[in-house]
Image (cartoon, rainbow, N blue to C red):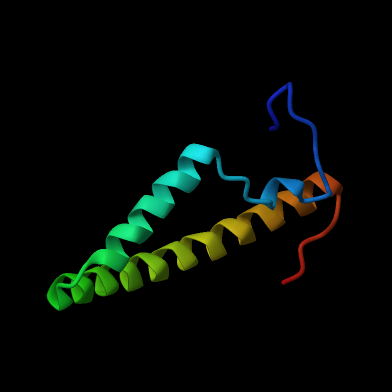
Length: 82
């Protein structure tokens, strides 16, 4: 059930990513730390960790989008295709 102050938005605008200035600056600081790193071992471990995190995030996002699509179909009165 949607919270009382939220309405159903079929336009999918909620999927547009709008980072705050603080989030953008934090990301930029992280990127610069990586660019300034000369230690190959550290960079290798970072790449491995990022690959694992990307896999997990992609899997989670796929599951979440499937769940959202099902909820969207239910809210709009549509039928789920199998």
